[in-house]
Image (cartoon, rainbow, N blue to C red; front, top):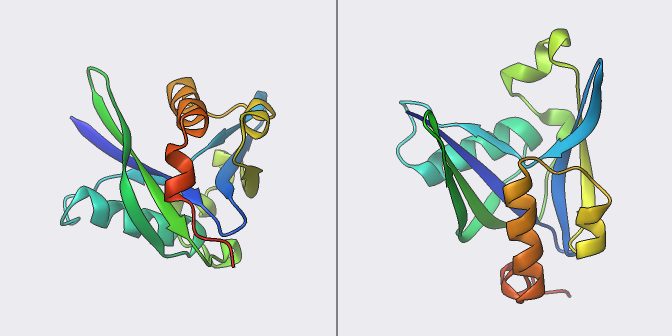
Length: 147
């Protein structure tokens, strides 16, 4: 069974980093940074750190597991994490070199219900879970303190 890890990366400005995917013939949608767990990864958290580095050249502080999703062929783990610095221009993931994969654009999304409603975050189940976490205050405790 394939395992994937993704991060709700919360910035000091209390925004969430999301990747806008643009593919020919498909409406734009957004995904959270992350990807597949590799055999060489020591843990799910190690895989997430590697993926965050590959996708946005950032270092995340994982604060907890937000949600898991299971299907017949895949398990996905969605973590809450703080991030202070990143450099999308320094990303190194192999998917970025393939022209046939379309565009990847990093965006800061306001960590509010309105911010989530303004984008088509996939999968919908995690978008709903983030909305719930905003409403009940769980994301407030995961957010970096404002200076």
